[in-house]
Image (tube, rainbow, N blue to C red; front, side, top):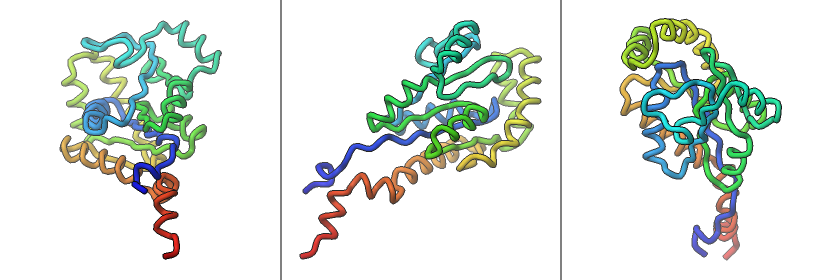
Length: 214
């Protein structure tokens, strides 16, 4: 019996990635998804206006605050939070549907949302990305050229409170050299997929064959 024939359908793994603004989270996540196309990125809803080049349904579902608040009342979100004056949330139905199909799902959210997800899905894998220094964090934020000075100062101020929650995550990754950080992020994903509990269930028939008496 081949290994492929002996596999069983399992729910996918939910990966949660958070970071202070400017740590390079989105760049790392996008590069990871190119390397690992089997991971589905859950597209968040937000009341933040689109930045240049961002597309509805690809980067975010951009909605008005009134609509977002109505969806909160309807229990649509697996998690939601207000970050830098804007609301962000993840559709519960979308995530559960993908996981149920056996696909791994990645949420790119903030620490508040990650805390909510861990409560409702304690088997999720959470990763916090740190910048290599405060000076580099500020350089990256100012280098974007997409935010006002006031917004940048608010993000820098808020970063201290966000970083204070890094220890609550399963993994902490420092994004200094991008290529190294990307390798580390992919290594976490691949290690999680090899956990004994998953592999034992995934290959039950193979293991039974290997254990059978001769």
